[in-house]
Amino acid sequence: MPELEFNEEEVLSRASQGDREAFGLLYERYIDRIFNYVYYRTGNLHDAEDLTARVFQRAMNHIHNYTDRGVPFSAWLYRIAHNLVANWHRDRSRRQEIPLNDLPVIQSKEDHPETTLVHTQEQESLLKLIRQLPPERQTLLILKFVEDMSNAEIGQIMGRSEGAVKSLYHRTLLALRDEIGDRNINLEGE
Image (cartoon, rainbow, N blue to C red; front, side):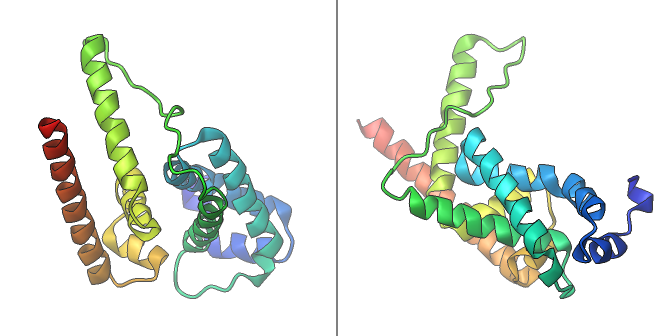
């Protein structure tokens, strides 16, 4: 359905009454965003596909319970995704490291293999650091940089004020900067 014709309130109403076609419209509208969120939280393509399917299965099974509380429908989907990812991490808590082998490597024609290797290693190190952050901070970074959302939109999804999101964002970036600085010192000292 073209963007101008999409009336989310009407589609939600129809979906909550059991209209599977209406739910399909919601699925099409949000599948990419939810998949990206889950993928960046898990770091694994296959698990992200499975968990994304479970998000929409759960949403479809419970859409009749959805209540508009003045936040976007996407906030409800992100909350379901957040809970499933948290359970996924809890179930895998015995493993300390998340495999990063599913990350896409983008290589420019002008890049030399050495440059690409260094860039890929830096990207993997940063993702490892991000995945060690508390889930709330991971969510913030994904919504900010992957989904390119404003602080106000992030606040709606996370149930926080815009000021609280700015504050959390600032503290998160400072913590990452300090951790990167500590790791660089440790690497140089070896």
